[in-house]
Image (cartoon, rainbow, N blue to C red; front, side, top):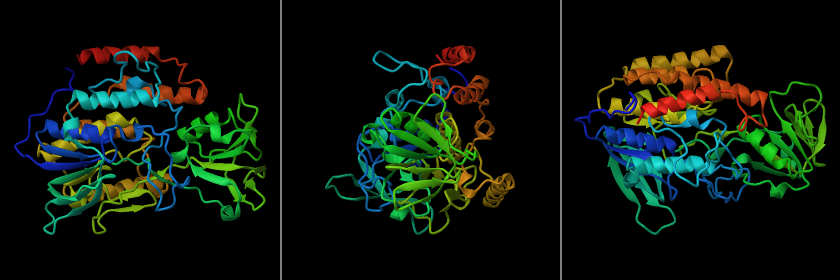
Length: 452
């Protein structure tokens, strides 16, 4: 096996640990913690593993997702979604994301069903199912009075079972961040007569037949959804901060889709005015504007806060210094290749909980957090970009690997990410099916062969 694969020697410490969520982060965290010999219970609200990769046609009663009384639907997948990263780069470091068996999606940029199948295979391969309590929601996580351990209160979803109160040595939060929508603020929107929704509740384009649709955003979901909707809509208008022109620009290769600057205001007559001076009478606004970090179950007595989507303070985006190492977060960074990153975070966490890897003092960790925030301020980034790793993910990955005594992330994986990102810009409509980096695919498969 390659150097990422060997299991660490089980720790003499045998902790009882709670993991919240059985998506990719929760699964790999459970694996690494069990490899160290710890007892792990994974709490999963849904009926299966996969987290955000579990597709459901169901949507919420509130299309915007702002009503606290709405029925929570955790999936944010649309039916047509394919990965925007090549599968070779996506997989866990010692469990390649390659086509397995028959009946799957062997494409390099596969469908969401293929990613879910991969995570299901991962859970089965490493015997993780036995550690998961499905259809169990965590209602409350709080410290015991003595502050040494954590009380976890949970209940069966949709069942009449009793609520459980259990005590754990540590809690690992892996509940994802694609459930609680962020909404764009639009002047006059309360009087605007059209419909609004968040991309969290978008599934298929059929409801938008012959309608004029405005899509707010420039992220992957905005790009995909606008292309999905335009096939059936009368017209699609994309409002984006990245558009700086003074007039709308037609999207190349489309006769009924335009780029605009951001929205200035909405009017009672159904019109929407953009900062570029253009005006559109729209039927629907789709907010592809991201999500909020949301931990309604977690009580830290003010130690941890979420301010403008910055979870603070967190040492290396994992540990609240005052509560480390018994409370941790896996999977907060975005603009990353997520599976390798959460695997390395989990290996680091597992080593720390076993005492093989040491954390700095609380004072030193807080100093590091402050320095990180100052770095972001010097770049002019707002707080909500605190966990945006667009310029540092591989530096971070390699730092984690070093802490764990592992080699850096493979060069081919890093280069593949960069090349794929550039190809996405050059071929926005075709990058999932046309590319120029077969030499990197060859390197990847040679690496995979070394894992056997």
